[in-house]
Length: 427
Ligand code: S3P
Image (cartoon, rainbow, N blue to C red; front, side, top):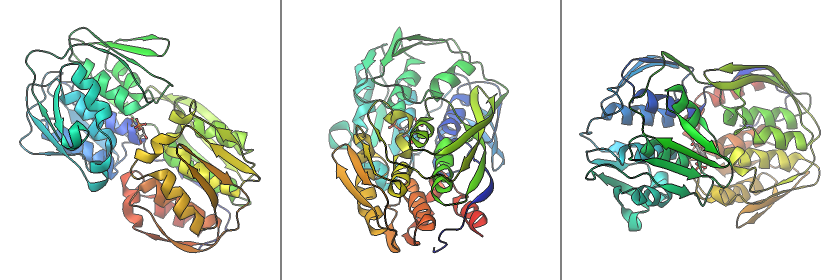
């Protein structure tokens, strides 16, 4: 790819949110009436969730690429799977489903791809075990393959002070709490994405909020809505927000972007760096706030941010690092140790690969120091089979001197049409 420095102009319709798409299928499978899901993200990760929910007895009809009808068998209607449940590359599928399946009266066995086998699952297994769940996994109950064995009676409600801010851990506990005896409470160190909470409420489940704690009590049933509309994914919009901000003369209108405030850290950081972003046409769609975002090229400058904002932009740090390479001055990111346990060690991947394209980046145990005003170079880079790394490298390539990406197809995990959009905008 060597399409350097052509201004990006026009509109991009942002595809459905990955986190919300997963949850829409999972929760619909606990209702007993059909749910029509629109703007679903038909990416490999979300299709892993569809496969798992089907194996548990839910009926999932794929009407079109972005439209599903899901019908479950009620809150207590999940069925014992006859096969191993394959979460693929998806941490969200695996961690949330461990929460949903730990209280069930049947055996479930999970696998996934080689990346998921390396990722830490003890963070979910440990608190679920405190509720009485029987879960066994490789590496001292921390890694795939994982087996959930049925418990006598019910799981017991539990108050969990989460050591790391993780929406996946929080969601696993809340989903287990749907079936537990008494109250299940999670206390977050910093607020993480709240799509599980919002969608549980859409299904009629009452939650109690007190400061940084969220409490769930098992409901009698889930009341499935007829329709669920998935907002556009700000984590996908992020690539265009940065690309248009750093390529001179660019002006893009990003349509239908979810702007739930637990996800908008990237907007705050880019604005802080001097980006020219305008939020337009703000509206509610399917219980979530969405808007169109107009982004115009602007000269950016460095910034610093840390632990308190990380959960609101955890998946956007690699693309923020791209913006920082083109900014004046240094950008300092701290409190981002979680990036070491994503689809790959993203702090290491950023340092190694961005350097080949001209970046000067110092890796720290839990963050990065990115020196701005880089001089771009053309290079061959590894995606590490990590979708967000591949998309960042592509943006670096078009904003800089070009790039050859190895294993580029991993973008299918979250943004199957990414390269088509990039081609269209750079033609
Ligand atoms: C997600 C939560 C985040 C995020 C992931 C999706 C979710 O992970 O990185 O891409 O849908 O709940 P953590 O909970 O591990 O931070």
